Amino acid sequence: MRQIEFAVIKIIEEELKAKIADQKYVNVGGVDNVATILTLIDKGTCQNILENLQQNDPDLVKDLQQAMITAHTLRKLENEGKITINH
Image 1 (cartoon, rainbow, N blue to C red):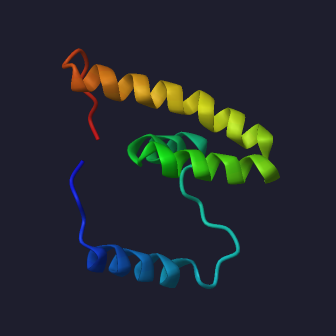
Image 2: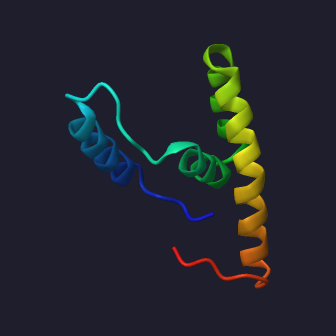
């Protein structure tokens, strides 16, 4: 996995904070998009996020885990050259 400089992360964080500062809810694309993001981060962070979500919304965690299996499978097939996904 490619490393990203901390300064870049801070810039992204500040931009996101500014964008959602006055909004109560932000549409990030639903369960499938969040599941895809979760499959891209390290397993420890993913597990921590899911454990925290489990306390508030166990049904959401089930949906995310189901979608993560699909996203992970698709990514694996793409990496193996068996399918092509247009991003």
